[in-house]
Length: 200
Ligand code: GRF
View: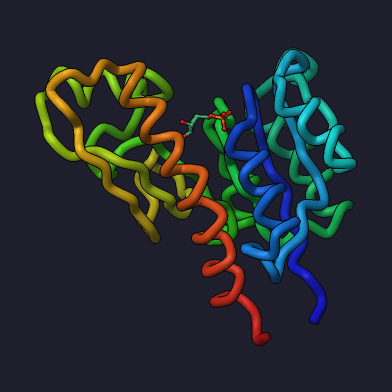
């Protein structure tokens, strides 16, 4: 069976990318291969992780384009050139625009560090989501994998993992605990998602 070609879009540290790479290597993601990593930040440590794993990667800078749409059109060309079938956002700090969303409709996934629809949407990224969780005083948090559409963090949720928020938790301690769950949830969900897309 031919493996489904995945691209991972990153902007930062890339620990989720690393968990996806490990999952391909260990066979948790048995029906996919990471063919490409794209970063919009040249300083992203995720690029080093891709290099270490021997995965082709490149940087696309927003400053090279006149608009977000032009940026995404170029990105789209690269995805098509590389015959990418599914796109995985992993700490990718850009909002996708219509050209990309239309071309890869229902083929783009994201991982978000809260139990969506709670603590999602504009401004709810990274530590900010965890700060909001602590401030709200909820006792359960977690992470969600969702299909990406035109609504920020608003596409269909396809998997979630829950953890307890302890009274002594800070946004930082919560982020660490949730990240451990992200690293398990994302690879497992990607494999499930692939297996529902193709006739194996
Ligand atoms: C993760 O918490 C992810 O949910 C969010 O950004 C963070 C990225 O971490 N979208 P990393 O770059 O994968 O280490």
